[in-house]
Image (cartoon, rainbow, N blue to C red; front, side, top):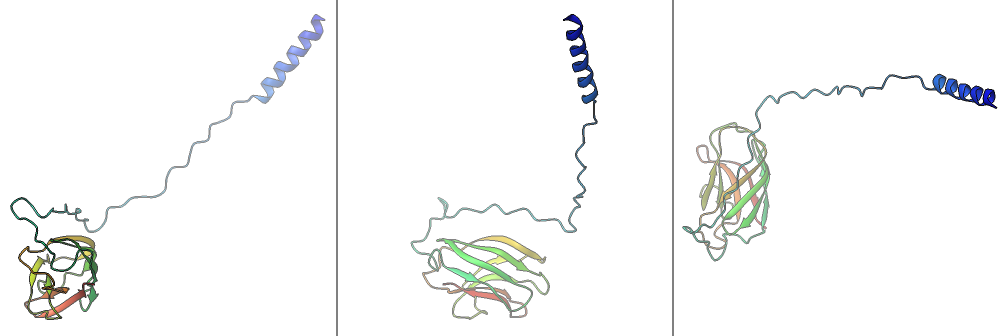
Length: 168
């Protein structure tokens, strides 16, 4: 029985050696995507300011009710965005775009389409392009309820309306 056992062990060993050849481990393909820097730097996301503070208490009512929105309708310079009365003294415009061309412009609150007379100037826009940006603005606390009903992007130098929206 020893020769049968030896032959069996030899056959098993040979079959294992023949079937167990080392193979190369496949390596994953290298990524082909190349990240290139953008042509224009992306501005940092602004840190929202919180109002009211202990030095400037909140008014009893907002100039428009909290939660009202105004979709900016472009008249010139690619002005778009959605303004939200986010608090008693806070208006946020998200998705704000403006080509930044032309004379200096500002964001203002107005009443009944009277673009020339600002109830309040919320922000003087920088002379640059805005692309889907988030703007956070403080509404002055001295404004009375419903003293304004619309928001406008306006150029006071040329008395030109770039875009506007009515709060609802």
